[in-house]
Image (cartoon, rainbow, N blue to C red; front, side):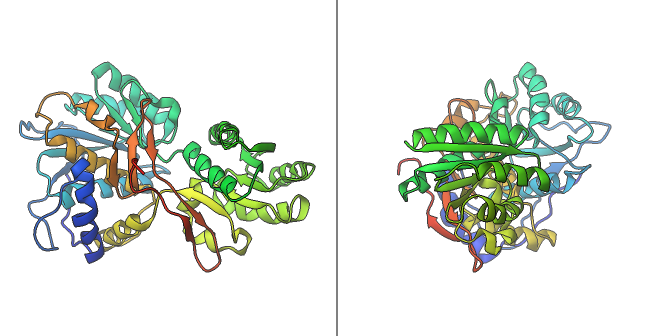
Length: 392
């Protein structure tokens, strides 16, 4: 069993916990007490061994399903570390979190977590793993709060907490329309993300009462991207082009767009750009707009994380932190041994976490308050703040 280490919170992060987390646990937060410093005793965070888990009648069993080996191990560990931090920060003693490695097989991890008596699943990370876990979880009546962004796995006890491309696309399209962009074009990659983005672009442009004049798809290689931009160049008069891919690919695409298609069109991006802050100072992206969750509180979390673990977290670590805050809040009224009170996840007023305001819609997908940012060689600047809650 591996227990969570104690750590010191930087002053800025503790200040947010006292002020900002009070909002979450008015909806969803516990305010840490006492002076900054090591927290004792450590919370129960463990990994199961072959002998199973010890009997525990005083705490809620919660399974964290993330990859701890394989190509996504670093991301999974970052999420697990952040979830542990949330337990420590809130001083919670009623939750026993056990981490299961999904890399060897998500379905097998879920089966073991059920056998160990867990009554709530946090994770998994990948959409295909979420689908596999959902089958076993539904049979056992265990809710799942997945870190995937695939809305297709949501519903019937599965909640999707990942950052949705549809929401970021809708936010940036409406922002651009409000600033005079009426004719849109788009570049979308092949694959699941590209298909979801394509649907979102069509709907968002239509809902914004604007026009989608061209949309071209490409494989993620230089030759295919160049062909797609050349095809886009046969369309005249678009005022904004949305590149539904990461920021580094956008850096490659923009010079092609300027040379082969449009010198003036506004460049638009998705939530993927927020995961690559170092790329957003590239001159090619100067003036580009993209929508994402706010990084203000995340930067404070990242400072605390680096202080504890000696390295920067992955951006998705915030999902681990915020999901555990939800558990802590619900645990106040959750009787040990009883089923997780899933109805409490459907609070229309939503919650406030590291990533800002969010709530689960009727379909089980997290709806988020997003901001719009502008890329610049001098650094990213906010041009449209995220709403503080869902009443604004």
